Image (cartoon, rainbow, N blue to C red; front, side):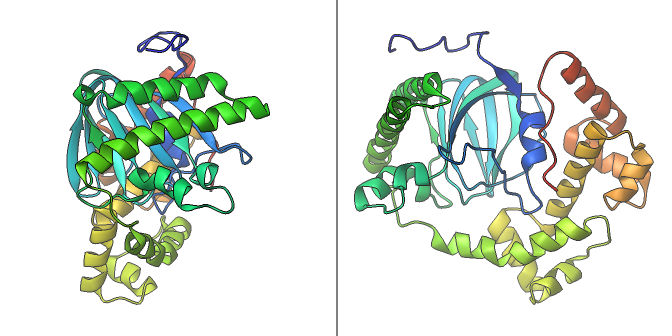
Length: 330
């Protein structure tokens, strides 16, 4: 390991609770919006996950590399279930819905690198720049996202991520040059690895078009999630038949529309519990549940705690020094 790299599990690292950090930034259409520096869109974060992570399926415009420092994770990537262990690397592009569904064993910690493709591509990308991003852009439903520790790739990638972290925020030209150099070295590792597996394909433009096709529905949900939204009403927003809509939505997002809507409503309820003094009955009604007992039932199913316990849990995290959720974007 290079000199100057911080300890793998050092307590000096700025660990953050993933649920309260990420979930409030996920929009109605399941997009995680990260507050990048507009002039230099790259960030390194240190995330800690509970046994039951409270983060919805999501995608994002940025590209992500996740190095697992401890624990064992069960990922849901589209309709697939993948496992990762301590020392593994997970490569995530910007088209497939994903989340960590479950943590096994002790606390799961990971170092994540987020960056927008334009950091590498620039304004006039050439073939060389595009090739650097191929492993993160060319991901289909069979892509091997998890890179095992024994390949040696994860540890080397982690070293480059930590070098990037040491340079951020990159205020000087020298620091920015260093960050871009380290990022290219990391990406080259991924290119070599995935080329050796023979899995690099053309970019998934069709998936992007499918997600864009759903955009009017996501916008409708964001305005009307407190009202009754049936499958028929959702299909009508997209001018589709009920059966075609159900198939199209599941094929694009990896879950049924009813499940997606319920998770979105519960996520909105989580934000209200964390950031307002409204009663549970008020919140239940506001997010579209007419029956408070049914709301509590669904909330418990998805978060593994009651609404009141969730509110107390978040307040306890804040009082212990963990950062609270980001400002609501709606």
